[in-house]
Structure formats: C-alpha cells, structure tokens
Image 1 (cartoon, rainbow, N blue to C red):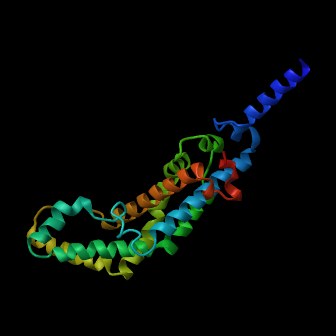
Image 2 (image 1 turned 90 degrees about the horizontal axis):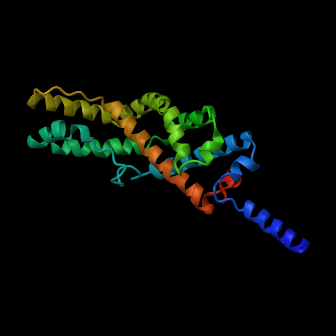
Image 3 (image 1 turned 135 degrees about the vertical axis):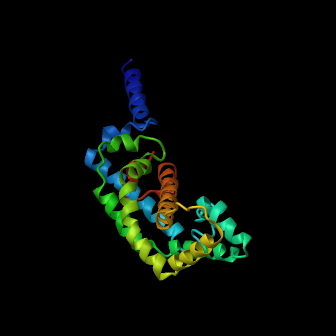
Length: 225
C-alpha cells in the first residue's frame, strides 16, 4: 500500500510539472523575470522585423508590405494615368518603398526606447495570453509615440531620396486636370504603413517564439514548453 501511495504521489508530481496551461509562468518565475522576458520577446521580434523589412525589396518586393497608396489610386493615380503620366505613379511607389527599406538606422532607436520604457502592468498575463498578446499590448501602448517619433527621420529620408520632390510634381500635375480637393497627408500615410508592417512582422516572430524552440535564447527560456 505504501509503494502504491508513493507511486501515486510520484505520478501526480510529474503530471503537475507538465503544465500545458501555461500557469507554470505564475508558479516558477518572479515578476521581474516575467517583465524581462516580455521585453526580450519584443526586442527579438523587432530585430526580426527590421532585418526582414529594411533591406532591398523588403517592402517593394513583397505585395503584402508594399506601400501602394491605395487611398489616392482613384484620384491622383487614375487622373495622371488618364493623361499619360502614369509613369510618375510607378516611380512614386518604387521610390517610396526604396526609401522605407533604407530607414532601419533611423527608426530602430525609437523602437528600442519604446520597448525599454514600456509600462508592463501584468507581464504574467501577457506571457499566458494569445500568441500575439505581447505585440498587441506594445502596439496599444506605444503606436502613438512611434508614429510621432518616426515623422522627422522619415521626412528627412523622403527629402534625401527625392520622394517629396516627386510627390510635389505629381500633385502639381494632378490639380491641372482635377478640381476635386485632395485630403491626403503623404508623410503620415507612409509612416503609418511602415509602422503597420513592422508590427505585423513582430506578431509573426512572437508566434514563432511561443511555438518554435529554435527561436528561443537564454532570455526567452520562460517561453519553453
């Protein structure tokens, strides 16, 4: 009977150690360790996003990430194409995406700062949440700051690479042919598309961190199942 009882306790112990619910995070890690793991996840996710997107064809070569100016397709683009100036639209798309691909060094410090200063109220809840819970929380808390922070460096790159000059020429041509008012913030649109794409890539990496052990490092061992 004693052996049976010990066996029962042993089985119970090992079963409890194999916790599929994720509650082990609450049991075996301090709040400081959980906070550190959340930031490590965000750092790896953002590094991955930057390396995938901010390279040649990272934006332009991928249909899902290409900055295509959908809001002005039916106004500016269609009007210019109608009058034989569609080549300007093609040039704008190409040049804008090349500009975006060149911005890693300009925007990465702001992403790092947002991660370092993020106020994480309940890191355990994020660790045990949905497969994109950490990125979603980061987006909710920091997207406004990042949109604002990106404005200046992106504006500089738009000037350096001649994108602003091309857009000005296009707008000048457009108003020759169309009296319709245009309510479109060019720079803000580009910034928002860039940030949206970074966050999509961060979500993808977070899912891999949670499900694929090859994406783990010493700072992310808390995610190991």
